[in-house]
Every structure is written in structure tokens, then in C-alpha cells.
Image (cartoon, rainbow, N blue to C red; front, side, top):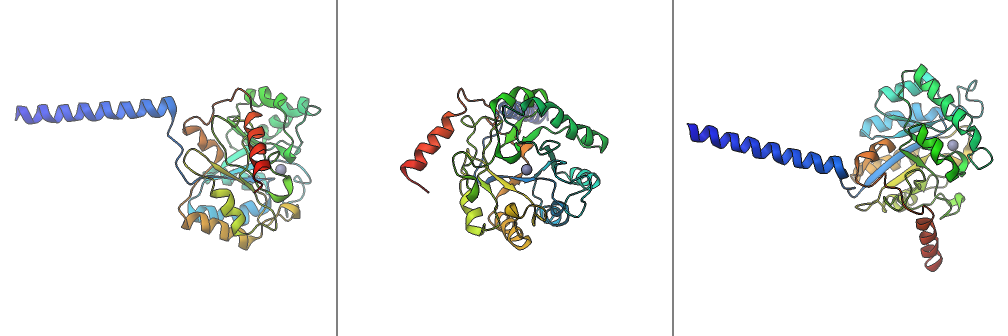
Length: 287
Ligand SMILES: [Zn+2]
């Protein structure tokens, strides 16, 4: 009897030490990025994010980040843009609400002095509607500047997402997968930025890059985008894209969830080095 108790005790101790070791490993380094990891992001507060995207994502149990701005005629046009009540509902559903500036202001060296108030405008609305302060940012209109990094950090931003440029031209919506350690956490590239002409093969090209250690970050606007037709995705195409991710067993998460994986917040010594390297690769063998 005593031997059995002792055995059980030793087993329990070894289980505890194994669990502690695993927790320490996860805490220190995070989990490794598995293959088929996709981040879904939606920009510009489009009405269809609530009416079309939300039910599909809930059906598939996909995570996602909605980057909110009050730009254009958001305040009065509730045919094309969500209400704050709808945005708050997305948060309560478990989706992430990210910051895309109050006025959809392109952030350049000339406008960076306005970034603090632009971020605060969205933070105040989030607080008013019971939404936590955003910890991720999407650069509006493809403008980026390292002069904004300090302000983004002061506002608690873990990650900021850009488009597929400058490696690829804006028009085609192509891009590279996020490479932790090489890409700056505040300049994460979109592996795909959906355009009206995108077909399933364009989505497949983007997510094929989600190898172990690489994350395919997808950028969508409305599905459809009734206010910005040059970035619209049709309802049918969007449904087909989500079905493809589900059938092919992609793991689909919000941008904030990347923080749990190893190396995603590592800041490279030179954030331009990886961009220059990709541009060299593309020049050598255009894709
Ligand atoms: Zn935008």
C-alpha cells in the first residue's frame, strides 16, 4: 500500500515537473509557428463585416481582426459602415478590434505628429462601447514610417500590419508571408490583399506560404465593399475562400494571437534588410 502511494506521489511529482518545464519553455520562447497558420484581417469598418463576414467566421470558428476607422462618412452612412454597437458585438463574439486611425489618415513623416490623437480617437470610442484598448494597428492607405514606431509602442501596440508593398506593387494584392525575426513587428506584410479580380488561386498563392515558421496574413476589405469598389470581394468569392481554408484545415486566428508564438515580437537590427532581400529575389526570378 505504502509502495503504491509512493509510486503515485512520484508520478504526480514527475507530471508536475514536466508541466512546469513545458510552461517555462512556452513562457520564455512561445510555441513554434506551425504550418498552415493564417491571420485574417478586415479593414475600414465595412457594413458587410457584420452582415456577411461575421456569420461565416462564426460558422467556421475562425478568429479575425477588424481594423476600425471612422474615416469617410462613417458617422452618418450606416448603409456602408458598421455602427459602434455592431463593432462592440464583434468584440463580444470573440473577434479582435484593432485600430486603423480615426480619420483613415495615411501616416507619413508629414502626418506622424497627428498619430497620437488619431489612435486616441478610436481608443476613446472603444472604451465608450466596452471594447478593450486595441493592441494591433493597420497602416491606412499603405503609407508607413519608422518615425511612428515610438508612438505606436506608447499606445501599447504589439503588431502593426502593412500591405504587400513595397516588395510587390499595390495593384495585384500580392505579398510575402510574415517571417518572425526578419520582419519588424510593426511592419508585418500582408501575404495577400484581396482585390475584386481575386480568384481562388490568388488566395491559394497567399496561404501556400504558411510553412512552419511563417505566417500568412490576409487583408480583406468589405465582402462586398459597398463604399470602396476597388478593394471589394464578392460575397460568393469570400464564402469560397473561407470554405477553402476550412476544408484544407488552416488554423485561422486574429493578429493579437500571434504574440503566443515564438519570436513574433523580435525586432530585427535593420527592418529594411528583409524587404531588400525579397526585392532581390523577385528581380532574380519574377513571380
Ligand atoms: Zn484602410
